[in-house]
Image (cartoon, rainbow, N blue to C red; front, side, top):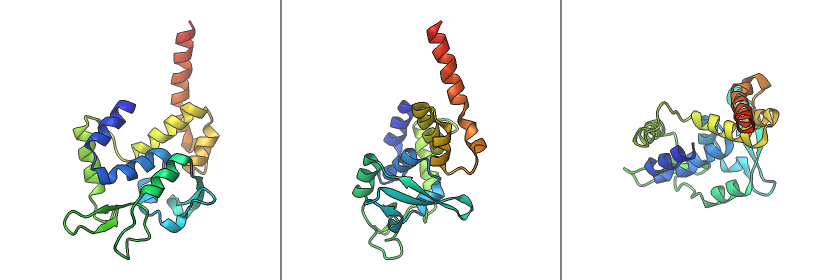
Length: 175
């Protein structure tokens, strides 16, 4: 929910906010986001190239909000981490490193969900949140399927219950 999202960000390390925000904006998998490099971002054509599960790639549109987020991100001061879009400041070395390299993202995210009193919520659930919100907004499961990079609509059908719930609520309001 929006209230849970607000609480999550209140308890999440500030340097992880862009990473989690990007997940909510795109529905991309954690590995896709951690591996995103600046040469995958084309602000001129307003397109990202995502590496998908199974070695495939897809293009993803950049909207104004994503453009602002990407434009605000600092670059790493370490050559090996410089190509990566999402980095964090290592508290021990004060160096900017690629998110995911230290293995702390999962633990930090879990700690934030616990502190925010959000039960049974994993990082991958941000993908479900994106899909559910997009499906509610557009009512277009094919569009959501393409944005998630699913090869078949059946994979996206896990989110169809949202429409069923919305239809039932609409009918309740109508009665």
